[in-house]
Image (cartoon, rainbow over all chains, first blue to last red; front, side, top):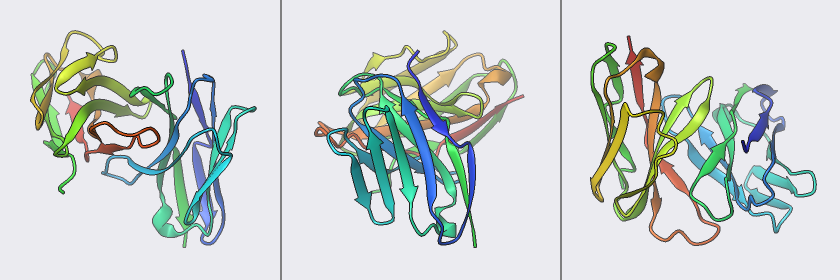
Length: 113
Length: 117
């Protein structure tokens, strides 16, 4: 069964620090890699996404790094803020261009003030 | 736009009872998804509709689960009879019509927290 393995399960970071969350995938047909952010009591919301034709994408304090050869991608949150405290999910489509996503198991991030 | 609207927010029921969860997608979106979230299994896709037609229900756990989308602005997920192991948060999500390549953004509702006692 295709999987997306996400780590760590939980992460505690000091305010101003860098938060790093990693995901590894199996299917080489994966061609779209989004990260979703979920606050308690809310549904996930798209944070940032990348396609494998680029190795990095930055939006504000959030950066996705993509390593196609290693089949890994990671989310970096620079200058982490208490408001970033949430659960983060990586995801990938099961086949190229499909609607069907496999989500990682999530990383609960807590940023200390 | 009010976003994806789900109701109820919380549902507590007894084993064996019928449960109906409701979803109103974002106007103009033509794809609708039902997901289930648990600590053990994370986010699982249950069923996917495109233009009100069920395309893939392979994630529906068993025959006790059914979903309908009678029109573009409403969908239901029904569990009959409900069991304690169905306890989870159920999310509805919608996606814009003809999402261009590179823009596969799902918009999630706030979910229904279901507890089956």
